Image 1 (cartoon, rainbow, N blue to C red):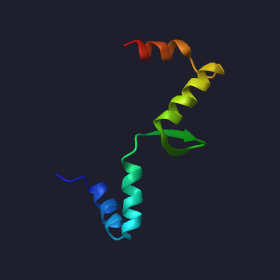
Image 2: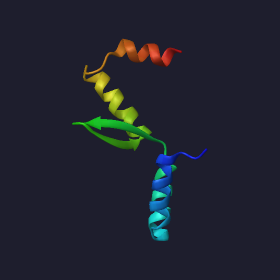
Image 3: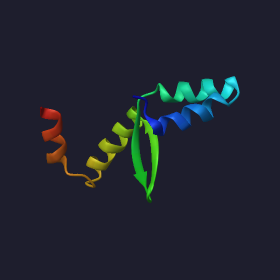
Image 4: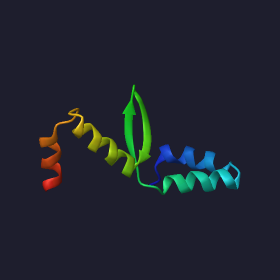
Length: 73
C-alpha cells in the first residue's frame, strides 16, 4: 500500500520543471541528518552532523560517556 503522505509530495514534484525534479532527487539521495535549532528542523549532511557532535563534546556541551557507550557497541 502506498504511503498517502508521500502521494501529495510526489504529485507536487511531478508538476515541477525537470531541473527542479533533478535538484530535489539529488538532494534526497544524500545522507542527511536532522538537527533542530530553535524549534526548526534542518537536514544537514552527515559529516557536518558528526563535526557538530565532536565539537559539542570538546566544548563540554555533551556527555562524552554517553557517546563512548554508543560507539563501543
